[in-house]
Length: 384
Image (cartoon, rainbow, N blue to C red; front, side):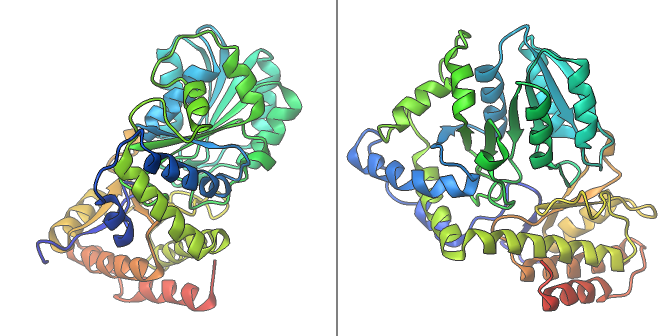
């Protein structure tokens, strides 16, 4: 292992393209000068297709969780009833944020590793007719599940007047999401996942329907007041000091996405998912999620005959390869591989190769090359 060589295959933060790193190293500029206005003006139209919206996408200095809390505090008030669909740790986080803000929260819990069934939400909405907002996670990072947000939105629209607010933190940029077409009211993501940036930016796209609610929400807010950010962005500015280096990087990341083409980006992510899943199936290592529920940005494995944390330790010590473990009650029972953003089929082949060696080192006898061969077959077939 070379001391300066590291391989990051977790579901965020993700590797940064060299051209994005270079862009972020530019000299600082005045955040109220024309150069910053020009930068924001050029970024705005490039963000819209990534979110599948005609709305401007707000850029706020803060983590993805800051975006989740911003959505909660702008769209609902203490005492309002909301529903939170919990399919893993980040659905649970949405619920925690709501309860911390004294919002009447109805949880709908799903077995971790499974996607929510839209028809079940229909029944839940009928039991709670005063729901003001429904919160859901598009990609549940902790389990590698992709929830059927399009179908959920349809059910919510048919059976309530609730806003539909979606955590797209580990999905937007790697998953084809059509905010306007699917009638999502608020869509949140963060910079450090498929957007190919370091942590530190959160993004919020807001529907006209949601703006009406936000504008009539008398709850006080200062920094995370979405209306302030919208009004300033209309003038190619921000209400507070922006994360300028990240905006430099964002401009370049969006240029890379534009060069590759959004459909090609989504196709690449599907191929990476299929390669990863095929490899572990060939190695006889159980996957946490079904093929139907699987995310294109992160895959979780739930082995039944070895310790996943022992595998992770060998990968780190022998190769400086970092893969993620489980969260909450899945801690110590699963491991997760992120394959989003700046990630190619070559990265997956390399990762599987290192994992095969590490498995043998911890006493899990696998045929070397078997997982790689399965991934190669997917790659050769164009299996996206």
